[in-house]
Length: 275
Image (cartoon, rainbow, N blue to C red; front, side):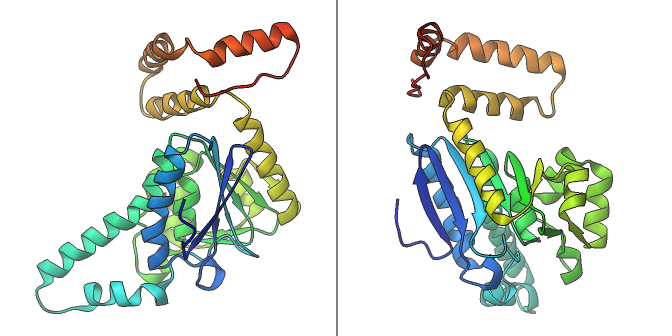
């Protein structure tokens, strides 16, 4: 993987790839580099057989301040303030939004589990990112805000589509309409995060331990579970049961399944290959 990313740093170990937001804007703000680089990074990690789990986190004190408005001004400005050839400008704006959606869509469509670890502020586009992850942890001091309405924007990168499945319609509507801030305690109560850790250090320890635990399981089975869950999200129980039955009839036979039985009988840890 290329080492020249400006907005992200990738660290790999034990089947886990940490995708680290690094700015360069204040508070790891999401500028043009991020929206260009993130889809590429996710595609590469999704195709990398050595990677079984992704862990998304921010560098330093915060996860992200959200969209880098100053950094995006050169790109966005002419498209939202122009007075000539409005149809052309609106078409270009639509194309830009769709390209930016590729960052969150990439996370959501990744075959491998994606865990978000949130410390400090997670604002605007940061909510879109974590909503696209499989599940989320945060530290006690973390604060969140679906803040787009404060700056005259309808959130358009996935939060309004994914949050109702995570926290329900009522919470989502309140957050979107008020654009208010909320703390880690409320994030836990509404189900946005699975757990709240006492410090950023504890957060990273737990998130990494969970990622490693997932990575120890047969990777194709974990990816299959994710695909079944995604398929069943808007289907009936009957449809979901039929889908998982067909899935297992196609993919249950594997070297890893044989290894699981052998390890159990031999009372040793299994060594899964993803085969």
